[in-house]
Image (tube, rainbow over all chains, first blue to last red; front, side):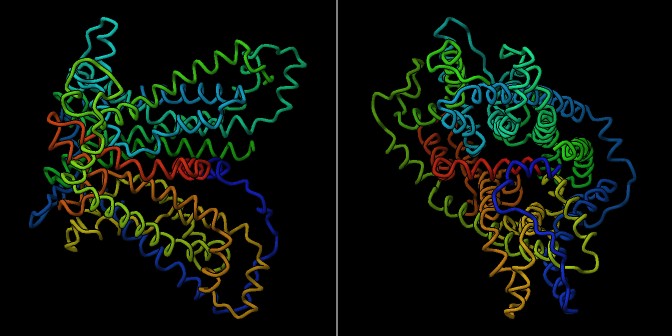
Length: 315
Length: 278
């Protein structure tokens, strides 16, 4: 997982590894080493591993913040979840969001990267512009989008009116709210994927194109089909999984723009978890929702590690 | 691919598509600046125009700074992001050095744990961390915003990979000069790792300046709000009444990072794409 991504940031000159053996001449070094790692190890335990174990344990309790005591209730939280319509709506919406944003942002990211690399002029300008949404604070830009999608005074409906089309109340209509959030998600993620693809395209050896041309691959399309696409295979798989993980975590736009509404039409997993845990303070039930979220994300992460492990051998 | 002459049909098509795409990407930014520059009467008109007839940016900015207390908010953003970054480096660098260059009991286990922890999404630990901070009475404070992020396992991993490439001779020479292991970390390793530290710094600052989820959970007080919290709150209070100052506030919140990005694009793209690893 890490190696494939590191090639994006690594590869600077002077990284020639010295194969010198690590020489430990002093016995004190081992103790010093422990002192050096102690703060990190302690914090890792308190802030990451401890909470991870706790969230799992909490999901089997009925703990509520402020309650004097709690009891172990086995799988009751999970049973409640399975019987809760909101959970299923939330899960379906999250999967819909992922199923739209991932292909959308990956395909557009790839298309833009290919177009940018296919010529030489204005390359860095385009790269900068498309990357801008990745940088800009999503909450601030979500609020701008909200006003762009304003039914009466927004730019989108204004433009639609201009060509004689009746617009929607995008974020207030249960048929369009989730898809509007998807559009914002794609808008924000395209630049990120584009940059990953650009790095992939640059690393394709030139000779492959020459060889393809000699073999009669004259058109741009056949060069893409025979060289670019197969060579980008590992990068594409990697980008798909990363986009999947990021889309699964969607929260900011939902919380500030729709609060999961109208009538739960844009409710997503992390938002449900947030409401249960931090507005109703049902820590136990929130923890169970977190565990479900974790299972999905870890599944995607495992795929990523698997792909990266394979990619490292190819490289 | 073959070089194309400057005005070939292909080049025209390439620029047409890329420019139209760029326009869509930029439209929210344009609309934000346009709305932030309009007086209320022009904002609430159903005829869409981008160039304001009366230029009201300064008025809107002034209103935003007063109503949303933006100076304080920007200062909060700065305090939180810088504290997080400095603490992350203080914790990560010694650990990364030990993991890369020293031998000690449990090193491989510790490194395996670091790699495992990279996989934990931040939302997963939110409930226990919130309960912990509640127990300690630290909710609604700078500490609540900073402490959970003092350790970046990703930072440790990145620095460790970088330190692996530093020649051992350099470290041996430093030891010969009588430097302690602590001194080696800060006086030998840190200077060699500046490019990696910069990339990581950009990644860290951008992530925490833009973070909404965690501040939303732990912060209640108005004077402790981070930039995303403040702008979301301003929107909840003002939405429907006056979009000019709201857009001006959004503009102010994104400006520091956007300017830094435009000044050092390559470094930023390098730093932020590292999030892919998380």
